[in-house]
Amino acid sequence: MSRTDSVALRWRCLPFGALQPATLYAVLRLRSEVFVVEQRCVFQDMDGADADCMHLLGEQRAPAGGTPVLRAYARLVPAGLKFAEASIGRVVSDPALRGTGVGHTLMAQAVQVLQSLWGAQPIRIGAQAHLQGFYRRHGFETAGPIYDEDGIDHVEMLRP
Image 1: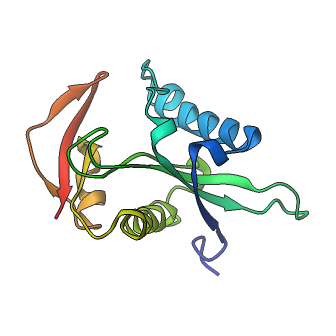
Image 2: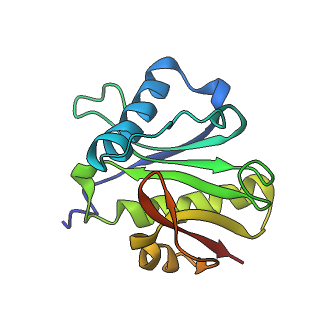
């Protein structure tokens, strides 16, 4: 069994109002763990957009069948909120699962769910520049120059 096979996630997509307090806490904790602490980036993660977005959760059951553990997350942003096009943002997976393919599964799920919610359409993202190769594997193409966002090089990418 490979590491990828051992990571069976259940996928749910919920509007902000349907996130239970414990789930919302897990989302914000994972986002902070990676985007603020690990990347040493002081920024306003809670940017006022979450209430207007859908939230894709990749959860793994606890060993004893207890409370699910959040392992992957992405924010699905409707067209007109961040960009003219729909967008996928705050893409994050549990650091303990890096190298298992969970990030690729997350992006594939995010694209599929976004299109099932709002129809087939272009998707624009603001990607960390060093992850362009990762996003290219999911059909995104570089669509602008590299820019600084909160001290990290980013680039807009578009999936036509």
